[in-house]
Image (cartoon, rainbow, N blue to C red; front, side, top):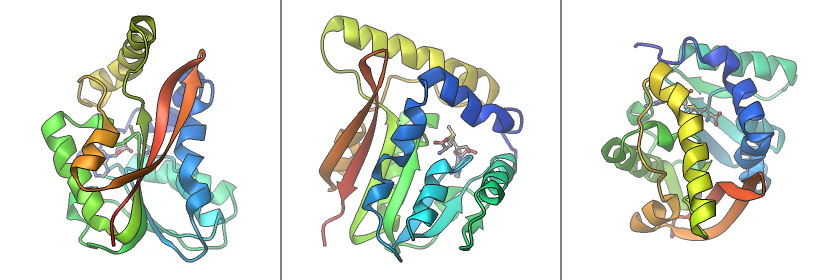
Length: 215
Ligand SMILES: C[S@@+](CC[C@H](N)C(=O)[O-])C[C@H]1O[C@@H](n2cnc3c(N)ncnc32)[C@H](O)[C@@H]1O
């Protein structure tokens, strides 16, 4: 399996922190407070996994999946630093190969779906939804769909392009307009329960969306 994040992995969270002044970090952890002790929680494309570590600290039984071995070693370094005494299951594979349909109380896709072109993004979001148990939740944290007046929307679009261009060039991530995740989630039958926004220079540039799968 080719590791597209080989060069980006060590720098990833540092770059996200300076690019967003910490808003990406807050966005990723935003819905962790919903987790109850013992909940089964999966993180797709976990990366360094500050969100997964927060979920494990909250008492979740955490599984993380990432195709990149280098990203998982960053995750492991982070785990070690946090001195966690719980076990986190780690899967170094494509999320599409995870066969635990309906197992999870929470499935998180933080800054994950934006790496795919639209057609693949739809296949992956459907996969994420299938891993959620009835009554469970899909959480998506990512760039917010542009809203508001023309100045705000233009600002959001330029900021997005600046953020994703290095990844388009280095990790071969997709280049596309910002996706409307609540719409995608609603199309899959999920009920949008909550949206939390995170700002950059006073503009709502990121959001975390909590979608519930009906019983
Ligand atoms: C943009 S990074 C986001 C990392 C992390 N979720 C975060 O918010 O910082 C995308 C991650 O998804 C992983 N990834 C990409 N495609 C994947 C796939 N099909 N299955 C599993 N992981 C994948 C990459 O290796 C990378 O670690």
